[in-house]
Image (cartoon, rainbow, N blue to C red; front, top):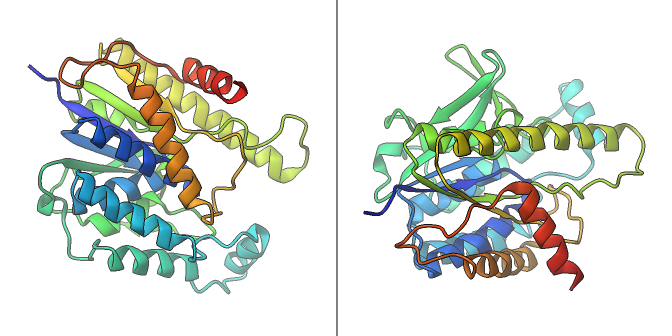
Length: 302
């Protein structure tokens, strides 16, 4: 009897294009999830694919959306200007409006609820700064998908926090960037995790405020990932972890390289699948973050 398979999609901004290629490789190989959890851009990919179908037609529509994103200035690169605009209350929420309109244009209409999604159970993770804990949208089937997705990507200064029912919601990556725990809570018995964590985004010798903040975020994110993977191991749930990184450093706000990243994510995931058993017989081995990253580095050097 097949176990309940979950796809877990991490956050990572523009690097979400790598997940798109990875998802195509998984679907082509016959892996079909019962449920999917996503944080930040992973929530976007999960929502788009859940609405359009976890099949090759659905992945083609998702790829088309990502190719269209290359001409969209979703996250303006001038970070300090964006911060100052928010600080002095001059921001008009341009990024938030562009992202929301783009999502609606690709099928995520404001009236769509989780109960309207067929064939797969979708769960979106955000962070509640008032309770200092993750929030899992989708447990209540009456919740709205678009509204939940916007909460999961609420990363100031580009996308404003969501205040609702006593909650102060921001990007899910603040507490669970690779939402393995959410998948476990929803009954996952096997997990495939597409992880966009990139430890090489900032060089070890870089100094200054920006590198400091980036390194701090990477340290917290890496520790979160380790703990969630260890939780799955403690519960006896096999996790096949795929580290989707590139040798080339691409900022999370730079969507101009989507085509290249889709192709790279496809190749990395297809190569990983080649080491697995048939999707009907389970996984041949467990892959953990450190091992995956070391193997990927060795492949790059060949």
